[in-house]
Image (tube, rainbow, N blue to C red):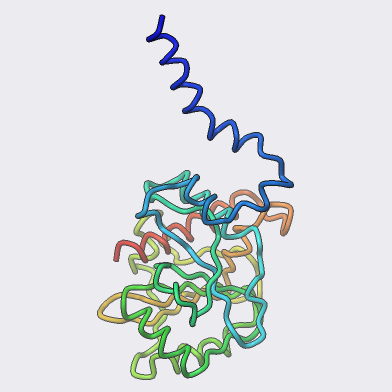
Length: 242
């Protein structure tokens, strides 16, 4: 009888965290620090953390609030990557920049870096970090200048369609998918290569970031949203494994 009671008590105690999480009122849950929520959801210290880059220049760095969480949940469901499904936000000068191996930037208009930011971003990318910039429209002319100034000794290259970023998880034989129409031009991916590895990938005329958003935002067909998520997983896979 005592053994039965012990087993019942253990089972109840093990179930308490889940029960509390499921029954915590929203009015209380909003006061729980995000760091605690992340630890409760994924305690694997090797979980991949993705951060949205809060950049300068006046562009809407915050564009597409649902994009990153939706993408991270897609990664969790469709790959073996241990992934933190909470979106983090970081600026180049933040002390914890190097905690995030994958940075995502998007928006419309101008991204610009100060001299100090350029130097720190160079250190981040040379040290193994990766920056994916999704042109949601209007970034191409100004950001390619920033790319050139970031690594003036490196040529900005358009990645050929046989590059691993288009084949490392899903196969994109024709290069990046076309999700949204901008200027009636084909999608292209530009990169900066360091020691044989693309460390900065700039995607234009594709806009997979908008494809990651909730379906009611842009009313994209499901097959286009799937292509956007798959291309994103390819980019993440390349950043983590190459």
